[in-house]
Length: 301
Image (cartoon, rainbow, N blue to C red; front, side, top):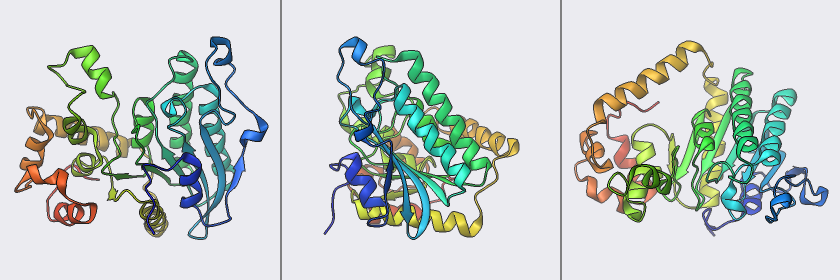
């Protein structure tokens, strides 16, 4: 029986992802490691600070895993939240596990913690790159209601593999932020179809920011994560070099040069060869993937 990834809590997701009975939580709620800042502002706290971290097995391979809880401050990152992620990734490097899996659902940095949150995200980013440099692949799953925005959106793109559902969203700035900064004429955050066309899993797959699209199902995410880990183990995780980063930057430059004139993601889909781009939002994950595999996507990794 399928279970919705979108509707699951962070704890439900991480338990469904890892092999049954293998998850060992680190810094669980019983230890009450909470943010030192929220209480000072009379803001509610969570005993896990909105992120669950631990170690377990994925398809029999030892991994470190973390799941952000979108139900607590939208999964936003603060000092303790970020420190837990950094510590987990550094533990992965020390123990030389088979991989790190990050189940991201976040609106970005907590405004309550401002600079502390920004520094935390930068440290997470550095830790992800250090893990990759040590030969440990990092896999990101995005399928929660809050999407993956802000600095953690950058963290996601630092990973080896990004797996999304159609319901997931991935971007640097959220729709409301863009509208506030540049006006509704630039981006109407109330146009939900436009929001998902622009930041949703299907668009991210078609332009190369996401390596696999799955249905809204916890087992589908688990299988995709196992497949990604197997593929990376078989081929060897790509070496993180300056040349590779420069190639990525060149890919982004060419993407802007090619699609910078487009006023809607459907214009991009049409240029990629989608015959009827207006039908893309209605396709189920399997049908969409089959359609996309027949395209020549020049900016896909």
